[in-house]
Figure 1 (cartoon, rainbow, N blue to C red):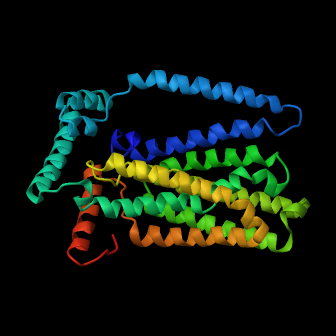
Figure 2 (figure 1 turned 180 degrees about the horizontal axis):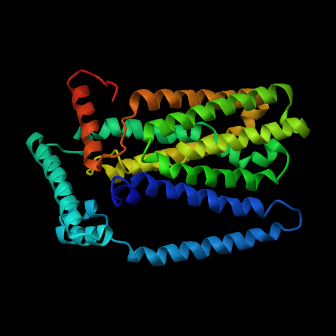
Figure 3 (figure 1 turned 45 degrees about the horizontal axis):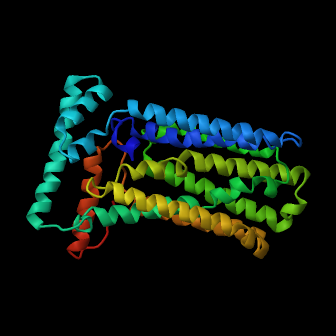
Length: 338
């Protein structure tokens, strides 16, 4: 949420992607500590390192400026101006952005007063944005990423692949940074979901002929490459972009609530996809990956036909897109392609 509100619109994609980069880098070390037998004690150093980094993060948070949009929302224009000066380093840029934020908030407040809205659900942009946000963030999990990452060693039968797979995720996310703000969210998400669909289906075909217990030699190598490409495909789009969208599409009056709902939903979906992996694999090993591939196809359809492009737009412009969608829906015209 903070990373969606603070950067300039041309840098929002790059800033939002950094979140996923550090998740991938942090996951490399636990996997690496389990590569060889006899060094399992290294998990203690992983845990201590995590505590140290968390403490450093908590200590340095006090140095961060307040979100200018939040400051304006609570009526503290002076704090918003101070934060914008710190962030932009220019009086002119700070004044222009402050005027834009205040204008959007005044417009939303005026519409709210005119229509005597009583809850955030009466904001036309809220429900359409929440529907899209929930769909994207839940599908991020239903494509099977956590099952593949958590059980990579069991699938491939060799712990040495774990660090390589997680490192490929970090590399893929880093490589996506220049393109998210150039190609756009829709293109990157659709490309990501397409790669995931193909690689999941490929893994299903591999397991049609050889079960995971029997993977070895060339077949094991092909399966490993398939999973690495799968993780790369996830990293260029479905890894960072759903989280980026959480800070871009929700109206300010319901941004915190919507982000909370989506966060709870995605971790619930993560639990579901991880919990069901074992039973699904016992049911059908190829069928499990074909099911994930079907979820990827659903993701492509959602991205192409229902997700508005947010690249290069201010947060207020993105909210206005969903407000128009909500107003058309309320008028009986339904949802049309954005």
